[in-house]
Image (cartoon, rainbow, N blue to C red; front, side, top):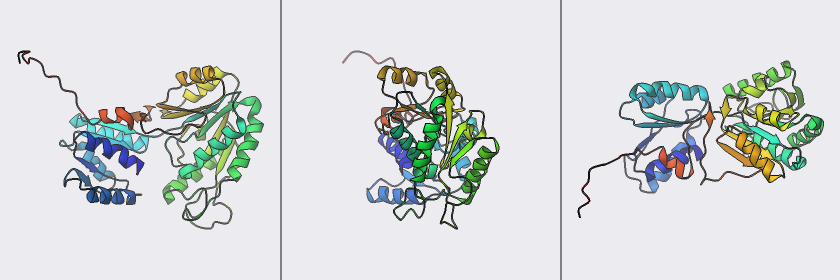
Length: 326
């Protein structure tokens, strides 16, 4: 619903008509949204819902009568959308993947920061583009953080999301297989598995459920530190100096979000200024729909939410030569 509303609302507000093509894997929220707009009396033809897979998306992106495309999804798919849109030189706004760093400064409240970081990664079964999936901590505190992370992961209950659990399944068999492959890759490349691991969670014998998984002693060259897993998997990396922490944080193809925990405001501001990410959250601050959301580098271009979100749906026109006479 968020991915839909943050596009449709500014498009309507700026006077645009639009076509929404939802994910073919998870389209039902879009159906409900269409029913809401119909019940609200949005005029026919302003909002249009079209279902389909990659072929439908390519047809929309390449159509000469479509002036702008706003896309949320994987970086791979975003590249395909941009390629399809290029011959008609239309504007493309993209909110793509992420591998967001979560830097714990030396003076952070570690029990609070680690537990919050675990919950943020496991939220939505790890299927959040801005999830803080790289926790970057002082090397001297790796054992302490590992213990805290193991305990926090153990508190994440998995099961039917209609019941009182913390985490449901991932979206599909394909995604489950990808997450399992990358968990195995982390083990093969030498990361220390401190929670979770491959296979179904205990007590579950079917479905696309993933164990809440945490790796320690990860280096930024490992696959699990570089690829967006899009599942409930956290990598913990160590740093020796603050400069190194910032270097590790920025050493990624992505730049959607970043997170910092600490108590010294001047140090937090200095670190935030060095991070190449579209949004930086401090000490567990939550999202604000009045602020822009979007990424640097392979995380996309353009912004959603806030005043900047309207800019994607308008063009600038200069009119010159009017007489000053009344």
